[in-house]
Length: 151
Image (cartoon, rainbow, N blue to C red):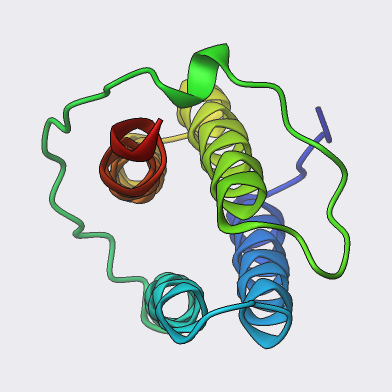
C-alpha cells in the first residue's frame, strides 16, 4: 500500500479513489444495455460524487465527523468470478464487476482506517468502508432479484 506523509496525502488518495469510482460507474452507465442498468450505475456514481465532496470538505475545513453504521453482507459477490470490463457487458456481468469493485473499495478503506494517524481519520475511513459495503449490498440485492431469481 502507498505510504502517506501526512493527512492531506491520505485525503488526496481517497479523493482520487472516489473520482476513479465515479468515472468507472459513469462508463458502465454509458455502456448499459438497458435503461434500468444505466440508471442504477448513474445513482451509484452520484453517491461516489457525494463521498468525494465529503472528503474535499474534510480536507478544506478539517471537519472530521462521519457516522459509522453496520451493513449486512449477503456475500454473493464473494463467490462470483468477474470478467474484464468491456462494452456490451450483460447486466449480470456488470453487477459482478461492480460487486467486486465495491468489495475492493471496502478493503482499501478498512486498511486505511487501520493505518490512520489519528482517530478522526480512522473514523472517516471506517465510514467510507461502510458506504462501500452499502453499495456492494445494493448490487448483491439487485443480483439476487434480477439474476438468481431468473435462473
